[in-house]
Image (cartoon, rainbow, N blue to C red; front, side, top):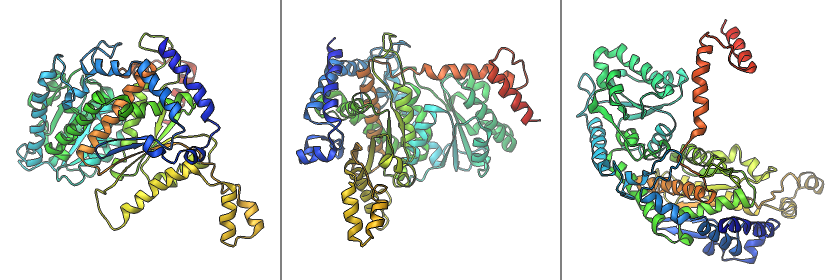
Length: 535
């Protein structure tokens, strides 16, 4: 009842703030940045351009306490079975030293980590070499979902100048993905990693079999030494041809989208090196400590979670654009998309009852400045309000002339333009100052007017490195968890991906020419059309 009352208390604040513009809020309070920003060391979250004031923020903080965010957080860290539908704890923090509850497997984390990092360094240094004794120049990671998105995102972010083997990633069961990756590679210099907990994931194993065939065609029996696995199914790996010494396991208390901190991060470690991988863990652990100890008012993940709830539930905005002004974070929006939407795309509560509130916003995005020249037109002047999360670093990872100054100028300008826009009067005055004829001003003024009042949050840090990336990922992990606590849902299961997988197995027989009579009429019609197209 307390939580219900806290939810109801948001509505009057939303009704009060909805007609007020961000221009008006800043005019009334020039100190909004100081009031609506928070920092952890060099990391700053500025939410002053959100349509929030002191009264609304107090109501959101009251909601966080009424919903028991702190209690849920502490239960997760203590190893409670917070994944209630599967009866498991969620201990991704234990993989990076952020917590150490007395749960089976936690004591083995350091040993398992040292083992796969030692293998990564052996590959990097040539101690573990190709069949002919030469070093590996390339590594292909075969996975899907959490076994792909996290490793590919982190590798692109921190391994560009690390001097390791080139890392490639294959996830799509479309044969074109594997064919395109292998086309320019030499199998005699390539190590293949198959990442599947059960070693039965259809897409991953289909690709793994084809990759093994590619290796064996060039190397014969020596191909087996060019394969490693991240899996708990050692017998299946052995049957596949992968010796147990090259199989690296993990635990069922880590979900796929939270697993890059363990052996699933093997390709990151090979590409970036063990030192950077440990720095990645250290950054995440620093955010863990902050999340577990900081008061709600200064707790960055909780702040982001409450901003998200305000957007989604109080203001009714169903989508968020995530725009990193950092090319090496090009896959970060896709990673967060899975993290957020697979975790919180739920319609029932922890008790199995219908959720009373909207959950799981649609997350999407691309790096700036590219995004400015594609979909920002809709964000600025479209009919829907689309909140934006900007991410930028004060220092570049690749200093080159004035590139970074221009990058930062674009980021800051976009957040200001979205918030404050340009009125028709301002447009007219600007055009007149340039000598544009009155008739032309009349014709174009409406088209060149920007409504503004489009909210955004900006996340700044000093520089993208392994530590900063780990901290940033953990910031979003904990934000997603805190939102799940506010909505009363389980962020650690993903039953929504199961039905399609099961039905794909049933339909496969029909696609391959088997009986389709049990399928629906539309699917039967599509199968017939596919058969005709294939001749």
